[in-house]
Length: 127
Image 1 (cartoon, rainbow, N blue to C red):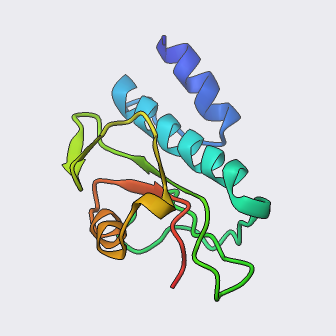
Image 2 (image 1 turned 90 degrees about the vertical axis):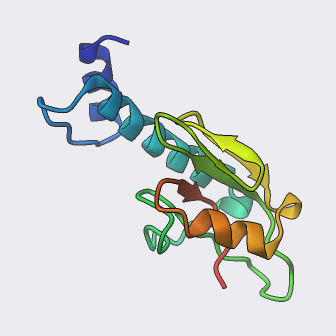
């Protein structure tokens, strides 16, 4: 993508860019915003409480609420990593969103991902 295309996409997503930012930085911000939007759209029942980022999950992470607290959380965790990539829980995370069904993750694995400041999580279940 050209810088003009990146800036146009950032404007569509409501991202304020800085002319001094590198193209890669703008692309990372776009990827984070798209992952957050995609996760919001794929949450069961459209559940999104708009409470914002989860501690340690990075910008754009949106927790979900289960309609029945007795039921295990359903859905998909979307993880976006840094430009150079990051390995956690035997998986590789890059700026390309990675979707993981919550049923495949243990509580410890979710905590490891949530505690990593280099990863952005969307669809994280609330305690």
